Length: 222
Image (tube, rainbow, N blue to C red; front, top):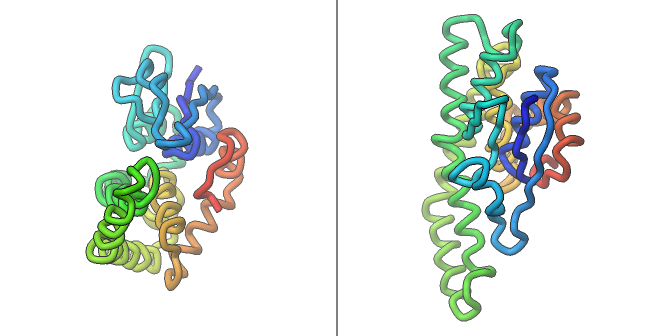
């Protein structure tokens, strides 16, 4: 039996969705973020030394990292090849977006989140005005511009492709869902009709909706 070590409001929501698309039975081990730090609990380190989510166990195998887990599930359980393109060029695009999601876009979104919280607890009260000003400055001077570049890049790509890896839905769309939902939550997708349309399509998929029911509250899904 596959077990997904699922942290609330996290990347592990994608893994539940992937499993629902594949129709593979699984169970969920649930973990809750610390309400003050928003970090994963120490209990996750008993599953994987880094204590991050997602982590998937399948018999004696323990896997971390969303991309690695998604690739493993596709290679192991997608016997009909429904979630990976067969066309050579589409497969290269598929591989690119699997890596782009966490390698290029998510670091900027994490930085955006961190710098937006500099003026709030747990930053000491007296330091919050200065920290908040620094956070706003970094966002305005660097992060917002970088994210606008990526937003435009994604919009242009989807203007020419129905899905991230080409004409058909694939696991690349599952991998890209979390950063695009993050973009939507941290600035919106105004002026990006193709990106907004793609997000509506993925969130309307029955397997996505079932994964939400299984995973529990997921704040950036709205």
